[in-house]
Length: 327
Ligand code: PCA
Image (cartoon, rainbow, N blue to C red; front, side, top):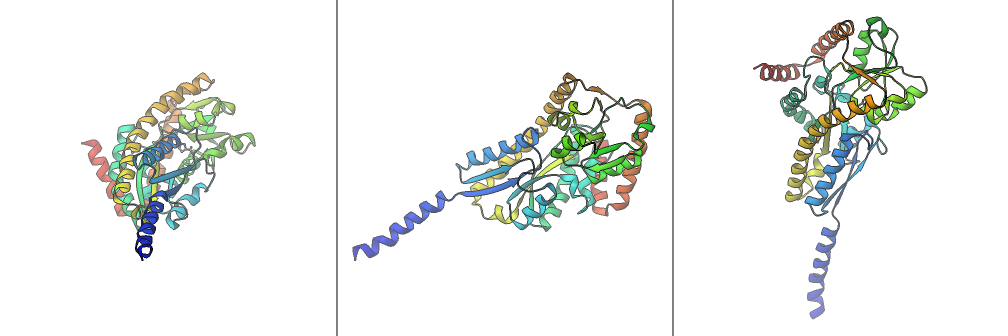
């Protein structure tokens, strides 16, 4: 008799032990390698969450596109195959033109402006993600984008037929307008693209030039300050809802810290990477007048394109950002 009463109690106690021992495990994918400051920041975020929750939530970060290819990360998080992901925000431009507003020339050319653009676009981006059951956690800018070549870039004609690696569709359009031949290539495939002769040049940041050892295949970096595109980190809403309140709070808090830390890391990495490029023999210089004029003309066309594609909500947000910036 005694036994039949105590057993269920003991079982319940054992079960609750088992439940807390079975802490949540999330899988997260990012296309960027371990040498990228973005990945370092994201891994720190995962560590912060594990620490703050005492291991109740562990996030396993798979970097370098090793688990899920870049284009599959958002669909995988949406389906819940993985719980979290990081992508280059502007690769989502086919879903909505608001996602590529940070790869347009003349919109935000400094870290302060880029951050203000993020703050202004965040509510709309969050809304669009929510429709798919996704929740953005934070976004961090790359340093501004420039042009890597294996010659000194000083005339407009040099763009003619130049095979340029670009990280998204918008940058490909830009290359087209300059007269070049764009190829979309993942960051991790950059060395192969050069070594197999598929590309002669690339558009990316000092950071990616540094982490991909650009000096192995190019000699010049034209610091054109085209735009400061962002990575976005997001999670599956259902996975988040399954966490208890304290764990949810810990995730949001760690995300806020990751965002703040990440923007500073970007600034610092830009400086360190510029130095690394130079130390490894790359000539870093701003565009001359002729090249700057050509970039401006291509940029104007790119912007015109975007305005045709963008819906009223996206245009309105851009307007809001501009009004704030120009105040
Ligand atoms: N590095 C990434 C995105 C932008 C950047 O600076 C890349 O080139 O793929």
